[in-house]
Image (cartoon, rainbow, N blue to C red):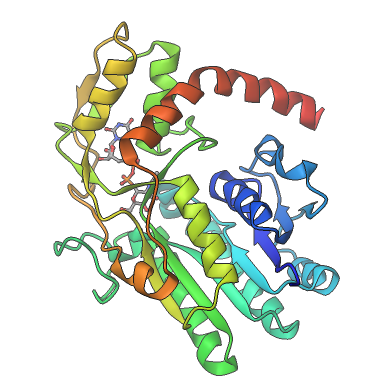
Length: 329
Ligand code: UD2
């Protein structure tokens, strides 16, 4: 059987690089594109050993970048992960948010349409739900984002649904919840809490808990998210569709803190600070539709996944920083 050909935007990023690895392990041919503004070449160290992988360093919002890539690679599907990931930066720079989180989707859809690429998988977010009280959040809820980031993700979903209706394209929008795992950048104050905690604990520095730690989130392993992306790009799916990618299990921040404390008994005590302004207290997604439509269910056990990540973090952070210097030379 012919190997599926998949173009991945944002391929050198946290989710992108795991998605590339997952696709390669399934026998796909993969072209990855990334401008390396936040993505890192070192994330693709496994992928670059594969003869089925090609990497192109380019800005996908360039006038003909995506069309040229579709012309040369002839993908069966595009997984569009490139974007502005910081909710705060999106709020501060709405023009940049528009260019990277809406306009880029238009360029992906148009390149796909003009080159007969059948399917687009899009990285949407739980941020489209805003601060909705009905938990777990189901896709039937009317989205009311409370940030420009969430608004842009919603706009891209709508745009893709429009392309599906107008041109019969297959579009799958995946609403990721809180993703954790190796390769997430821990160095911004708006990085995922688990990557920040892992970095601080491995450095012997105190973490800060915003609020009383009683808030809950639906944390999903990046390995599961990469698997969901690969399924959405390669399996028969009734489209267009929008699916949550979550576990359905809310986890309290304090229980996560307990795991870090038990693995680092000598670490300093955490600081407690005021809750972040505008923050939601509880979040959890309903995973049923992803199971029905994609046959996807999160499989990584949270406690085991968290411990594996914590064990990797100390030495991995230092090694990867060194290796990246070597790779970029
Ligand atoms: C997530 C997404 C964000 C957006 C948002 C929509 C991540 C990284 N962010 O934000 O992109 O989709 O959901 O609602 O997935 N915390 C601490 N100490 C720290 C850092 C965080 O206590 O050093 C707390 C934080 O106040 C929050 C929880 O940990 O209560 C999770 O924070 P987060 O930044 O990992 O994710 P979240 O849910 O705010």
